[in-house]
Image (cartoon, rainbow, N blue to C red):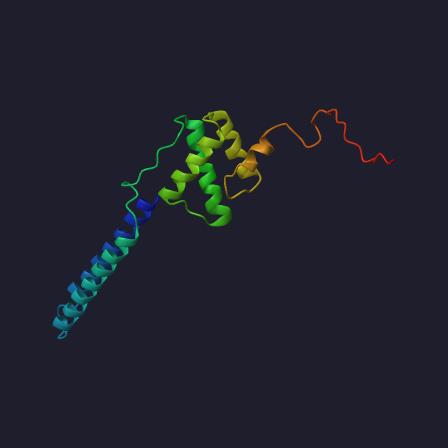
Length: 164
């Protein structure tokens, strides 16, 4: 899976390739009588393209400026978290922006009680159960407690009413 920076670099490289190919066309047309008109049109297109790229860059956050810190450093956790992000992209088309990814990691860290094994189990459950969101109900599914396993308690409650 490519990072946002790689996509951006590919976009810039493609634009540069387009500019280079257009320049080659202009060089091939030098013998034409309309060379000055072609050059002006080309220069106008380059300026427009440059302006559009600058405008687009405003809306795209710099992926290196907002780097996400994972709560656990093991390769198993890193791979598992990347699997979860690929799952979100593949199944739901969700790309986690850095702010959202940080919040999900914080919630995962809190729910796992700062325990890496529990965090890995939660991620595994999220993927296997096709859950989009991390929430506290996941912990109920991870525990072995099942409804009805509670010990019976003594109670003096009765539905019979003492009548006089």
